[in-house]
Image (cartoon, rainbow, N blue to C red):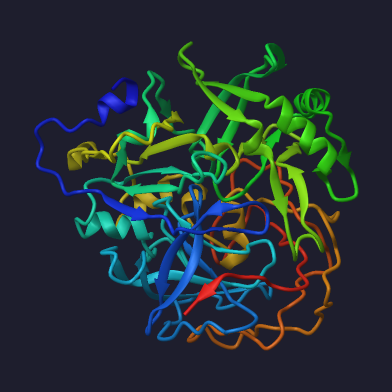
Length: 489
């Protein structure tokens, strides 16, 4: 291997084995078919499906409208606001990774949020090791992956992830390894990235070029350097207006100003499928001239929005016009074709083209830890270290501010896709009386009277994540008329 991949090769060390979290066999979601993962939360354990957040550090579960999910034995965090904004509650409980009998880890007293918002059809499992501070700097709650490392259940504070897709090889499930990577899932390259100095945008790459090729004809869509954040929490790819205009010309796309998205009708979709264009992102960093190309077929952009985002199945192209340079993001659609490895002990990461050779057997490689004195990640037990990192290392004004930590910084005041679902829901839902039990009201909350499908990122660089004493900005949650969720007993 080369670059970061060579650095991560074990060298005669006796290491704890990485934990491979198998993906669920299903593809779920109402903004595209996404390879989901399974968690079992609470006591007794209840099974929920989640997507992976490469930016978030917490676990969220969607509180369903039917078949209520009750997560019991949740203690009130000291000094925490139990409920903020009528869309979620925080607590602590047991979180187990994978189906029963799969051998996945089980940790007690983990930060857990029950959310009520149409923006998330599935729950979220965060991979970032940042701790959660409910009241002050001195008593942070460690993240799930930090607890795994602290208990020596993984060799290092690291992970690897690819979103998978349903259009290749019948279907390719997502890949998630904690403390290592699967060398059979990607094509090695020589490019290594250093974490962004802005902690809340650590996984930032430089897009040095974008091109599209179809039928032997190629077109440059961008030759400017674009610093973009990689965040699997959202589906979309946010690029400058000028680049979006080039996409419009290449794919005959039309921006729908009412819904703030590129909708694709069946006629255009059939034409684009026939052309079978490939979009190539050339990625690099500011320090070197080395680059890696990540190629995405048109199928990676052929996504479908369903109820409750749209009353009917509607195809869309997951590209969004960014309004400033702090919004540029490569979301989950991009990670259908890219394999991401993040090493928080060395503050480095890599992105590689996925390998689609199914003849290769799984090959799990542990990422070794740095010696304790060399470790670069902050210890959750050190008040000074936590306070010394950017304010983004301190999590969140309840559920509202954690939205910002996963790069869903502010959603458009215009609707994206439909603002009407078959049944209007207007009665208030969750209350703020207690955090002792996460439960579901009989009718879901309509959150704030705004209605849209896709997020618009807010142009901020430094984000605060305290439950009190916020001094940066407070992101707004989207309007939601009804909640759809995936929950399994």
